[in-house]
Image 1 (cartoon, rainbow, N blue to C red):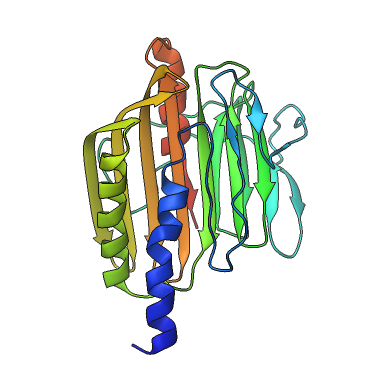
Image 2 (cartoon, one colour; image 1 turned 180 degrees about the vertical axis):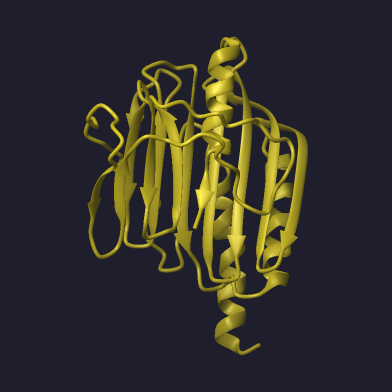
Length: 250
């Protein structure tokens, strides 16, 4: 390993830390270039803080998908097909994703993923030169799903993936606002993944959370975090879980 590669690997661990703990009121995101951190998160009151932009309302779903593409990425809404599956590696627990026709699908061609969400929920997008941030929520303070996607050249070896996953587990468990009840991980081929579940305090309110991550030796990193209040009704919980498990990569 040359000196440049080693330096990238050292930078990677604190970088992923900044992306992983995304359930608190603000996110502190760092990048290799040392860009000043920004805040991008919903407060418990439901207010959106940070560089998110509201996606325009999509037409009523039809059998034909509506797409808007450019050289780097594409975002579109379309009818979601039933029986969508979770991205590999497959980690427990699994939730059936019997997505209905009135759900929409968001796709990022640049980072190679898509996710479905209820038609009456809103999707907010925020981008930098090195990352994409997507927030999905209803107009309530009951919960949300946040997705972070970025590329880091320091993640070029399977050993770095395991090292990062182990460090993430410790970071989550050491966070005073989070109680991790379960953490599972696996590595299949060139891709590693993990699922963390537990409890989280946001602005004094009690939430349950699920945090998932996919990390590849191609440098692509996808992190998603879903939270819902403990007082949220069961159908709201199921929607959060279906959004999480509808996540797919190409």
